[in-house]
Amino acid sequence: MIELQHIGKTYRRATGEAVRALDDVSLRIDRGEFVAIVGASGSGKSTLMHIIGLLDIPSDGEYRFNGQDAAHLSVADQARLRNQKIGFVFQAFHLLARTSALENVELPLVYSDRASIKGLGRAALEAVNLGDRLHHTPSELSGGQQQRVAIARALVNDPDLLLADEPTGNLDAEAAREIIAIFQTLNRSGRTIILVTHDAGLAEHSGRIVRLDRGRIVADERIDHPKTLLQEAL
Image (cartoon, rainbow, N blue to C red; front, side):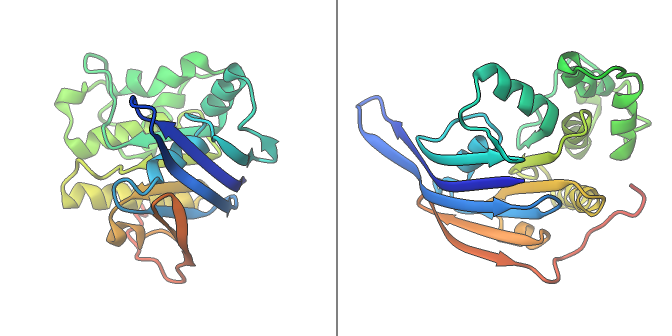
């Protein structure tokens, strides 16, 4: 699904100084994998996620998504690909404060070209055990519930890939376990998931850990027996 070859990313500070955020990153992720990208702050993991999610473009190298040259698409085509094929979950929930959980989840459908979108928002919320919170606003939900709404919003267009950037960073331990359990269940059903985190313990719930340090991949290891928090009810 994802093929990165010799990806580099250079930013320039206001002073004109060049900062190399990614340096010669090559990575392949197959459909159905659950991959954790791990590294300290400043290691380049969020920059890598932004490139994979077509939120940024590499300075050099090649990026192919489902066999398509994704890095050189037009802005409009990249936006279309993001909306149709990629779902995002961030540390901050990014929910609209005055709208219901259902309305928040349905927002990506505004840009969808599906023939019918009826019932998709409700189904996405039911998939994360929030079918009884459809009309609650974010202020009426706990942090864990708000993140589940954000996950439902990421899933509503049935994307090929789910990208999660520090999704448990604002949650207590119990809510964090619930979110990881949801990711594991989604992955077991065939969803490809990339989890970006600085938490090595959290990464052990994935099936593969890619470690970054100063913009380079320094380790790439498979986990034969990941820690399991599956929720059978989902």
